[in-house]
Image 1 (cartoon, helix red, strand yellow):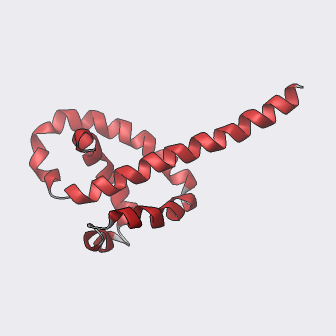
Image 2 (cartoon, rainbow, N blue to C red):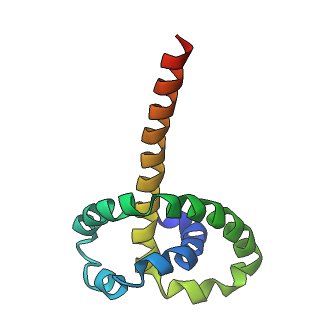
Image 3 (cartoon, one colour):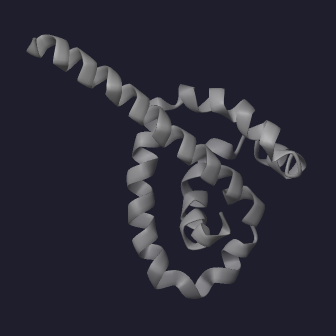
Length: 112
């Protein structure tokens, strides 16, 4: 999890927008983030188009991040934050894959 530190930090930039409303909530549920990330699962369903863009942004930000690796300490601040966000993003990617299946199945029926 922490391996992706450089990567997670980039996520902060994006997720902060989504997390602003329940940002202090995360601070509180830091210890029981397992429950928390279940709750957020529904939340993501909502922002379907959103996280698609977030994924693209992330890649761009990752590149910028490599240059800014020196500002590492700055992100240390929100360490707990982006760890939770990281989980969210992994879930969102899985949801995408599930939806992809729907596309393939419909295209296969059209094929036959």
